[in-house]
Amino acid sequence: MANKINLQNNYPDITKSDELYKRALGLIPSVTQTLAKGPTQYVNGVAPKYLVKGKGSHVWDVDGNEYIDFNMGIGPLSLGYAYPKVDEAIKKQLEDGITFSLMHPLEVEVAEMIRDIIPNAEAVKYSKTGADVASAAVRLARAYTGRNKILCCGYHGWHDWYISVTARNKGIPEAVQNLTFTFNYNDIDSVKNSLDEDVAAVILEPVVFQEPKDNFLHKLAELCKQNGSLLIFDEMWTGFRMALGGAQEYFDIVPDLATYSKAVANGMPIAILTGKKEIMNLAENDVFFYTTFGGEALSLVAAKTTIEELREKNVPKYLNEMGKKLKDGYNEIASKLEMGYTKAAGYNWRSIINFDPKGGDPLLQKSLVQQEMIRRGVLWQGFHNMSYSHSDADVNYTLEAYRDVLPILKKAVENDNIKKLLKGEPVQPVFRKVDNFNMKPVKKDTDFTDFKNK
Image (cartoon, rainbow, N blue to C red; front, side):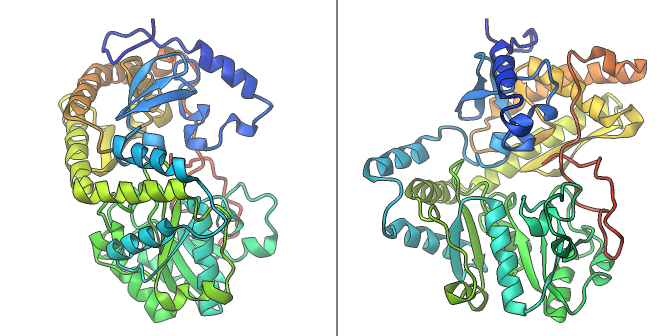
């Protein structure tokens, strides 16, 4: 029988998941479309690999096992799976069509909504993925300033200008690699040391899990202004989640350009570029940024309906409140157990469970907790990506599961036998790093083996 949400489950039967996985091997490179969803991020042999259904905050794998999901599609499910109002709007639009030969009214309606919410949205453009709009922002910045170099901090997708700073830069010309550099978050000196007269833009995720210290973001904005470089906020995670108007609203900073995607359409593929009109107007004739599916109506109506729900239900406030219960609850359990080597950190709406080497290999610690949480019906990857569908019952149950699981980790750490307790291969590092890599003017020979999860 397939597992339900129950503290007494056996390890899930994942026969069908593994059968599909075997079929994908050799056919689909890395077998996944997104590394954070792939099998390397889960205990291989225990965790499911394929999901077939989601409702609210729960998901079901191909073998029928049910889980509370705290990944939420790696971010897009801000309201929850199969959210009725959004799905009804999509179905209604589907009756009239998906993509048309001329523009659709929703392109205007959604742009007006964005303009009224996002502080810098004097102009709006659409695409399909975060990487698309990040690259468009970089191109606009170069066109507007007449400069070439880009400074970045965070994760910005797979396109040449960004991925050139990572170890996976094969296929990217050296000339392109020499135009992008990185800086450390909360390290204003690393920005000062990198800025010069050829820096077109500074692009960063306003927050990942660290909070800005010593007025870092405001100082960064002032530095960009003084240097004549544009400031770009990559708000894939913060947009419509940290506040309805994203980090711009939360920190009261108006960047020159900003990019959005994950939370705005509750799972439908849309990305949004916003910016000051004098910069965005270059997309009229000078900068080419067009795509056949930019005006695709199902995603636009999903965005319209999602934004309405986020605003009417004050969803950012709810995410903060529910996420705080979960984050604080985890830390209280760990503290009572005197487990100083693990802590939930970050913002309430998206916290991360950290494991210190004092408890042994952090990835092994994470793997054991993941294995035992999955057994108890929680699809767990070390994050609390909160959605409007996460209920008090979900949070309370998850805390009960932590009360079961953390003593198992503590005993394993004390006995130094974590690896022996794993029923499959442990979690591997994922392609992710946000600081201390490829700093200008250091030669790009860093070994990227310690990337953090998306």
